[in-house]
Image (cartoon, rainbow, N blue to C red):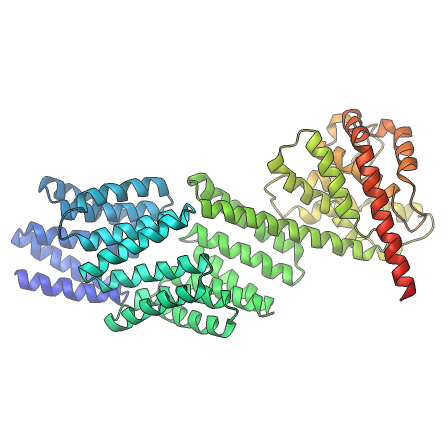
Length: 539
């Protein structure tokens, strides 16, 4: 009976290496029945533990947790530290996959205590590897490196080639992050050689996909594509949706970086569809890449929607646990947001040859007032985005109206004033992390209720829009327009003081204090423009 069970375990192990999880589960269940019949508790624990891992790979978390829990209970009753360590390791992996990083770390450490006895090198190696992954997620790269190397030493001592291949893959990924690309490639190559030798195609697929990032970092898109092809083909054959979606994400990056944003968009949308079913982090990464691909096609509004979805997902991950990696990605993503809205603002100005640099200057003035008015620093980035987009509706205003040198007719003025409503409607589908739309819609409302589009008065006007209006008017007065030359900062200030009743009085007092700083900026901006005009004239 023991030899029959051993044969079944060997067959199931081969299925695991080939990624045939359903077949492996079926074979292990047959072994389970035989061990129960024979009342062989040691073999039973072996089979139960392995079934836990097979169900984990099959995304049956509930069943995996049941098997690991049963194995842990039996091991404790038998005072079997070996299987207790293995069962705790399995539970920790489930916690890690569910985003419970700190809880997983504690469980791994408990597992290590049980496994710290002679003959448990394989378990210790796997535990050290997984502790290395957690250290990597938390941004502790030095600790991650030491954990991986310790794990590799244990696994080599145990003769676990599959375990070694997985650690070598993680070492490759870590060294890509450290920009030690030659060393990273050597680790990936060693991992691939082991996978080829033992027929572990499931791990080979992961290595091929991760090596794609290395080739992208090396600036070798053709090699990146070939490596991604290998990983995608194996993942498709194994029906591994995670591997497929990871590969599709990299296809998107490859196409975007090689000037084919339309193809990038197609592949990234496919990656998002798959990832949304099983992996929040991968979906967030793919949404971010989609935003960049859409931006490359000048699909600015769709790009903002994708970046916003990515930001929402990363924030969900951040709320679950403090991950340095996620925090870093959120910071980079907010930079992507700002870069996109800045370029969109510049495209708005391209229609109106008299407003070059207007969005940037207004954003600078408005952010200074906002800071003094008490808007928290972490919200200033989003406020700046609203400032860049305040005139987005002007993209729908005919250029002949924007650039008309004379006075606008009543009908033309109504068309111009519609830009606030149009801008608000354009941004309605984008659920920004911070409320930007009131800035866009209401920045022409007046404190006395005579503004547009909604004739709001006093505190009914959104606070952010009240700030933006002051900055907007000061820049408009101090720069060239189609119908007049720029006013001096002093004259602009006098006009604004005369119209004091149209501004929030408290915010206007802040503007008064900041006026010397703004005046210097306005003079500098006009001086730069004069220099550009003179240079253009000589050309």
